[in-house]
Length: 513
Image: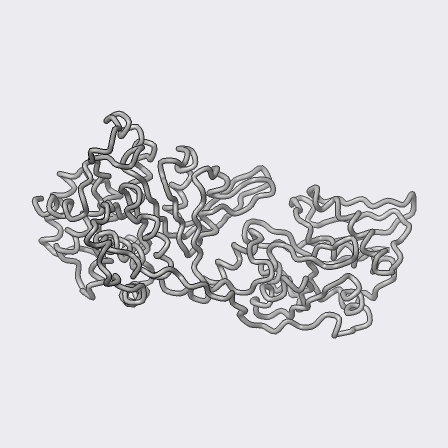
């Protein structure tokens, strides 16, 4: 006898519906799983057999063939345990088949028959909706996440016995309905900008990055506050929109970071260690997982001590920073992961970090070699470069707090509202709209042309200066981009200074242009 149960497998951040077909034939008792099943899937036969026995049901003595269709797609993960068990029981006649035609099943089984959560529940629920199935059967930990998908009924089952009771005898209490809703994680308070003493230029750069979605590089000696500033950026950013929150939840679900959670309501902040490998940063491995740049989607990716990352690791960031997504090509196909994050990086000016002071003993070759670990093309993709000088004692001793995060966040939200009316953040504004909304006035254009000639800006640099200029104008609530906005934007396109010049020094050089 044959029976089919619908399940799903992950392909990037999406799920592909998979038909679990079971055939009970004559011959020596065995269980064979076909259909490009990975090791974890093939091992499910042992878990399924033990779980059925622990539930008090009879495992059929037959030659059992399990086919996972479509057969040309690789299947990975432990989420096929529950659908395989139910399909075997239904093929054996121990379970009515009426309800199986309208349900998608996903879940791992323990040897005792408990249903455990798996990755990608929200994607599986969307696959169920696309396949026309009205019910999704998952573990209780996956239920809040799956319930975010409108148009499907989510049922939570704790054991294989609960699933059999619900599908067979219709015992509703064994598989309660999970109400549709947005079960958000409890919000953790972000550190406040009022804790930062001094650093007016760096605070301004942080505000510009948040307002326009611009990538930011903070460079300066140790203890100047670079990490402190970066960790306060998420609090300045506005909350996630509903669509953005769903995208973030989907990525975190695929990575296995949202088990037991519902909608991710906070913007992610990811700070990988500099020993991270290229697959760890952009995704990969076996099985393939999203990398840090995707886990920071719609949030902040903070790379502390940028030159300490290997050159190969940093170079894989070039395409995601431009396109906002990661495309991983493998023999089995191409996977796409979203990667629309705000990059914040920090670095010291030299190996010891005290370049330009009597404490530094680094040679010019040491400094050049250290800064050369970060390639020019990567630096060119970072809109804002700002030096963070040491904080003077007067600022540290000042008892008055700095401007609070809330005040900065209000200005950022107002600037983003103006950009939302145009259709995109300034950092990602299409070129046609950039020409319409970010074209400087006559004086600003003359200043920009002279800067291109004297500072050697690339075509990308020209484009980025105009985008930052538009953000500065938005923060000032100015309708047009003027020369003052262009001048301030040019400060942040200067190369990394080796003489400990501050952003204000860069401003004076731009004024001389």
